[in-house]
Image 1 (cartoon, protein in one colour):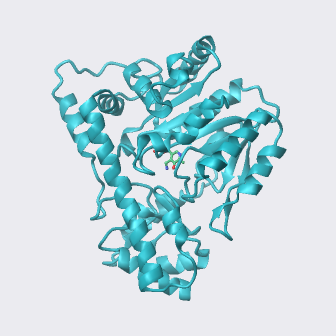
Image 2: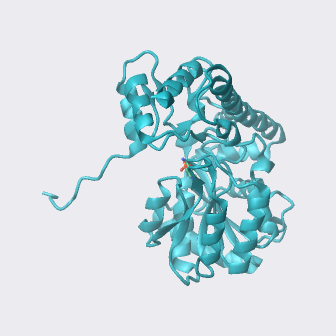
Length: 403
Ligand code: PMP
């Protein structure tokens, strides 16, 4: 029975989490997970989410009817203003089509499906950074878009491979699609500078390329929502054709609620209406209607001035703790332990993740001898570090580096 179904390999990250859970060592540390943890390694429900939940629970008018196919309108419109800025011409001229999705993953999927069907392809493929969020490699082929990579990470400098990246942009067939991480690149933590973003936009405009922005960390990276949307807004300002996949998993701590949106920018209001009609058809056949609860929470937060201010403070709490951990790890390695090598990338990188630059063998040694769980590419989740475990981690890393 079903003998033709081959066994698929387990998901590497979820396998790592299972191994961590099974480990009974008292000092074990989980640096694999891509979710925020507080200073006691616990998940954190944002105070603003608690407040919004209370308001919803006590709303006598609340029911459980279906949302419209394209989602809760007051949520999608506020979500669009958050990414593009409320005074953006794409908002004031009604040139953006916004559809509620099953978090960032669903936005990537719907965006990919839409392009697969309707983009004017010269060469049907998407270019993603090498490396990228692993799921990008599965999402695009699922809708018949092959994946190619562009150079992004330079292991020599533990930074951006900028000349090689630009070269790929220049050599690609005109009107190619490039997936760009809006901020806080996963998994490297390496982002282009504003000047580099400008050069990327120049080449993309010149070649007529399309920017597929994945925005999973707005506000979570720098602590400032506008700052983290800078690249997207700059591309809009320069009229680079684009779409944005947006997730509220990290910046609102709503991982399991699956709150996301896809925003497709058009040259005219009339094109935006046509695009919306097609996205509705696609959404209808896949989910019929998106889930209501998380979208109601985010809508309340974005549309209520006091809650919005509280949210900005909560976002700063998370990003601030992560930035503190970067500074402390850097201090321990360079000043106290005098660990061989340059560790400046720890403070230069941004967002949830850091590429440490250690080898797969050193990563393995950390897992096996120190009970510190991280992926074999040397990526650590900064959110897994806190004042209780950071010294143990720094000392273990120091030992692994010294061999
Ligand atoms: N894109 C990137 C780059 C991510 O890191 C993530 C989360 N790991 C996502 C999209 C989507 O996450 P979610 O579906 O939970 O919003």
